Image (cartoon, rainbow, N blue to C red; front, side):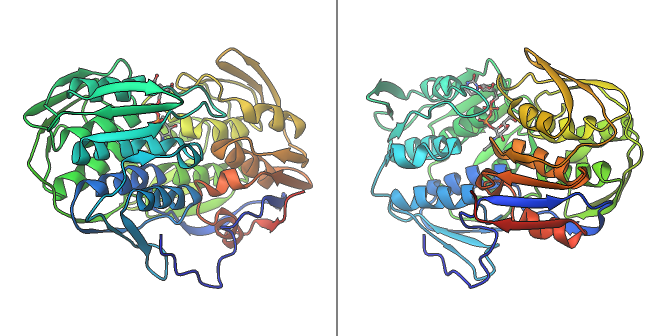
Length: 434
Ligand code: UD1
């Protein structure tokens, strides 16, 4: 990746501690960046074309940099514009179809290069992703998709190798669960397959639709993205395209909770209000005032009422907002129950929130939260991306100082979150970790 760094590089390096003073209501306007979960598959999809694609509204995140390193290692080349919101990807000649452990291990979404490589080169060898902080996260459904297209799969020494003799052939695949990654990988493999592919019980997340829009602008023939049945007619080749990434609904949701938890008044710009529906509905139920414009939402915090929440695939309440809402419900006036149905181990933030005075009991996949009037600042650790976001939110409303260690997890998914919060009146600073 050629990356013309500027001096203004704070907030994106390996410094790993945030210090927050709980300081009252946040107020003002904040702009959300492009969606991390859209840009990662879209960078991978660029490998399908022979030429130079241009992606706009790219969030300059650590995960994005890892994906760029990965596609570079395969023979493509990536280059950011000076302001780092525009990414050019040249994928004329791919030289390598092996994705090494060292890169795949750093980010699970690396597995998304499997579909494009298999489709374009007829072969991919990729390190089997391990478990991660939030669960075991298998890839069996991705492999089911590749097998349905005629990919032959072998596994050994920590790697999965998939190959096809000649072109992949269109096929029918039913996903046992509407996995986002498996839907995206199968779709990317199928666009160059010979014939017709049907993906049933497909994920319908906005990021799946954004990927389909990009692939279509590259010349793919895809129908039904955003419904549970996606139909793809394979084409002979794809061409490079320009694409603008949709706004990050999870970053937007996190700022919505920031307004709610501090009793603030924040207008969040560059959003698609429709994508925020489940979060908006639950926050309104909790007593938060939300008004929607075409591309912005204004969120005003009030006294928080308890609510029960169950995570579900889109358009249900997103698992990626579960930790943040748990922080909010910790200061609600009453008892809430949060049930996590997507990942088996996504309550790591609870132990840390308890150190800040939250009263939460986890029983299996449920967290029972007895709201309290005030959290107290403490030294806590971000165990994963959204857990880190939850601790930042808790710190914003806690009494005294909160120190959040291992903040590099947060930098994987939030572009300059400390700068953005500061612009809303938060008292937050960064320092080297202990
Ligand atoms: C994506 C998002 C992540 C989000 C998740 C669920 C990206 C880069 N990441 O992750 O932020 O939390 O969707 O909305 O887009 N599963 C299997 N077998 C598989 C694949 C998945 O059993 O082959 C299971 C997983 O273990 C999990 C569930 O399906 O329990 C959902 O996973 P999935 O939708 O695939 O999530 P990701 O695509 O990994």
